[in-house]
Each structure stands twice: as C-alpha cells, then as structure tokens.
Image: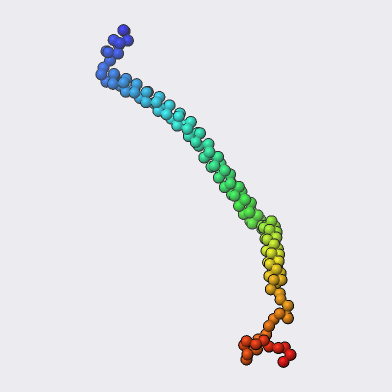
Length: 135
C-alpha cells in the first residue's frame, strides 16, 4: 500500500515518462527477440552464401596469385613456359583426324575402283553406238 501511495503522489509528467520508459523497455525486449531470431535465420541461410563467396574469393585469389607470378617473371626477363599439355593434345587430335580422313579416303577409293575394261567409250558422231578400239 505504501508503494501505491508513492506512485500516486508523482506528477503527471513523471507518470507519463514512467509509462513511456516501460513501453520503450518492452519494445526493446521484443525487438531484441526479433533481432536474435533474424540473426539465427540469417546464419542458417547465409552459411551457403558464405561458402559460395569464399569459393569465389579463393578462385579470385588464385587467379591474382598466378597473374602476379607471371608479371614478376616477365619483369625478371623470363619467358613463359610452353604449354606442353596443350601442344601434345593438339598433335594427338591432328593425328586422329588425319588417320580418320585417310581411312575414309581409302574406303571411298576402294568402292569406286572399277577395272578399265568396264569403261565404255562412245563415238561422238554416232551417239548410240559403242566405239571399237580396233578401228
């Protein structure tokens, strides 16, 4: 009872300030719960994004490192190494294409080869009659 009399004796601005303070504390507590829940949700959802971002940053860092090494070598006067794997791959691909083309040409030539005796000559003056070779 003593506490209620004390609260009633306060002035109106003090009571309004006290109520405003209580509302502010309540709002901060509610917002804190919401922020904590949002942080948990963001952490759950953001872990995949963080992995993707770290992969992207890692690949960008690797590329930057390779470029820096190449630039340092160029400034030092060293020539870049030949891409042997690319050259060997191109040579093997060329050999395979050449082998396939020559095989196809041999097969085509074997199909079209007819003996010379089967060729029939036609006399130009007489279009419907075959020409004899003994004439």
